[in-house]
Image 1 (cartoon, rainbow, N blue to C red):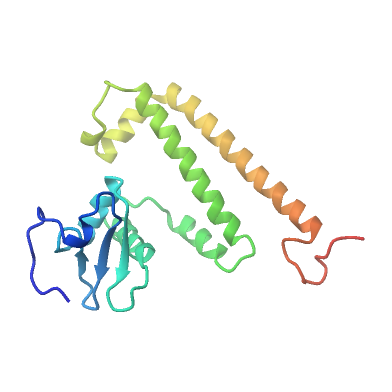
Image 2: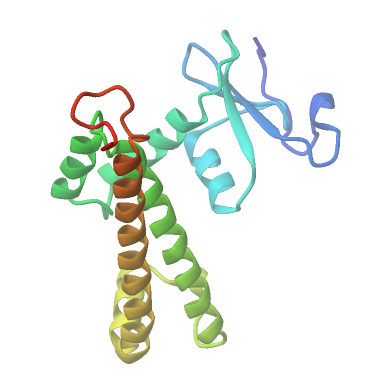
Length: 196
């Protein structure tokens, strides 16, 4: 286990290869170690990597198990318990209800595709608004005021987004129905076999 903090400017030899995956190690003492910079880092540093779009993975230093998702969930938990949460209690309860449900996998896929559509929408909006504002200087309150002033533009973009979201959900429902009729969704479950 590394025992001292090194300068963040000097990359570790194992990360010398250009474009190598950035690997973070999580030790039993809950500390995160960046193998590229040979230094300990915090969840705030990991959040910054996410914001900058850096590709990385987190591994348990003892077992080698890949635990990136659990670290990202810790960041979300910190964000949700501080300042301005993104998810309502009702929404979180709905998400929990899908765990163990037959539609769990489809819901995950639906949410992921929906989020990507929203990111694409945000990109188009940023492109159309280029030069009007500096997105890095906006607080959530300023963003809300700005969006209120952009109501007609946002109504058009959000209308498209909601229509795409609805179409995606309808397509997923149709796919499930087709698989159920073919008996491929729940093979071997009585009452869900294809009709002969």
